[in-house]
Amino acid sequence: MKIIISGASGLVGSALVPDLTNNGHDVVRLVRAPRQPSRGEAIWDPANGDLDPSVLEGADVVINLNGRSIGQGRWNARVKDELRSSRIDATTTITAAIARCEKPPSLLINASAVGYYGDRGDEVLDEDSAPGTGFLADLSRDWEQAALAAQSNGTRVVLLRFGIIVADGGALEKMLLPFKLGLGGPMGSGRQFWPWVAMADVLGVIRFAMENPGLSGPVNVVSPQETRCSDFTRSLGSALRRPAVLPMPAFAARLALGEMGDALLLASQRARPRALEEAGYAFETPDLRHAIHDALS
Image 1 (cartoon, one colour):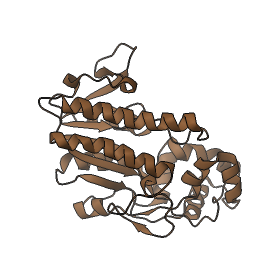
Image 2 (cartoon, one colour):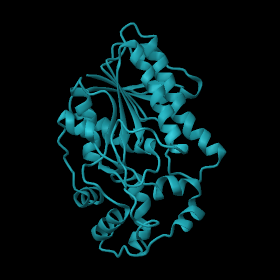
Image 3 (cartoon, rainbow, N blue to C red):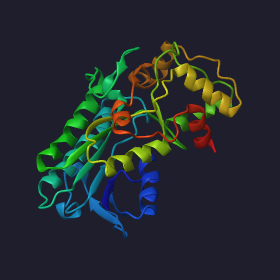
């Protein structure tokens, strides 16, 4: 297959490109000017809506992973603008280029997040659940709407609502230092649900979406193993052979991280992978302890 990837240097993209290449696919990475593109790269400028449709012409799959990391820095007005533009402007640039293709790509796989659901306590959430409220929920909803524009050109659209990705890097990397120092523990009450997914299943779900034309629309990319914050931190402490008993009070998370602390650490999303289970996807790493062990090793 001919596959176009944006955000190829990020957490998922850096694992996905070699995975697809090793499986015999022709991968083209979208990179920004002014750098000179190398073999397997094509130039685009998402901030200015610039992407030559010939890059996408006749492609089998476009995978859009573009977006500034949610967890970098407190969310002031400037950061929020960057988080939105890095996702929505990039996605709009891609769908606009698709609209200009004589032979548009067959499939657009677009990243999203379980943040779509907002803070929902113990409510069981599947792909038909309504969006929540708050900055992350609004951002995820608008991001998905931008991607769905490609449907008008006959392109199948799959929206991957990622949970916490357990991998070498990302959220897990940010947690390691306090746990290694013996200062790790649950956030707030510890009872909030933290949906997660192993990197092996992130890659597996993307391949599954490529190979199964019946899969479309939103897909919760989360393990079937329901996990509360306290379970997650206990498993991480166990893997590191460190205690995980020092809680971070909710007020301290809010004081340290502001709105981001509420949205990323204290919010609860009891998300279930209903669409994947109904489509017959078999999770490679459904157990959190195994996923953490694999990521750390």
